[in-house]
Length: 172
Image 1 (cartoon, rainbow, N blue to C red):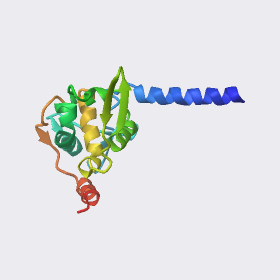
Image 2: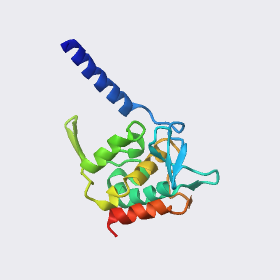
Image 3: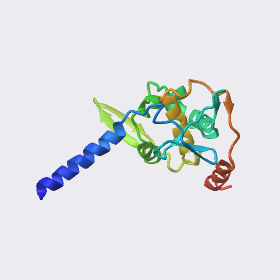
């Protein structure tokens, strides 16, 4: 019985680690559905969509804007990192959606090699929390090479669902 419990715990940890460390790719990030302008991949995870003429979906564009208003101070422009914080465009290659949400909302502290790094919690910052999916989608697009550095040149119009969610989340 104890061996079965230990084996079960080991497999749970192993499978959990494997899902967190699976390499995201353009193929895995490919949009397969659209719910009022929000694109989802085959797993139902928010993702980006880029038209052949370079037009990005609203959420990717919004994520670019929100990232550069709140996150780039520490994590560098376009998610490329800085001497202060890691490159999120690299981190999202192996970080799943739930882990991203958790770290941004709750923060994280790492101690390695005698160096301490702290990601503050942004769960109470509506300028971040209300746009977590947008920021995730933008960084995911950067991580898999879906969009280059810089401001996306063209964007879709803001969907009604985004307007309604923003108003309810921001309290207006």
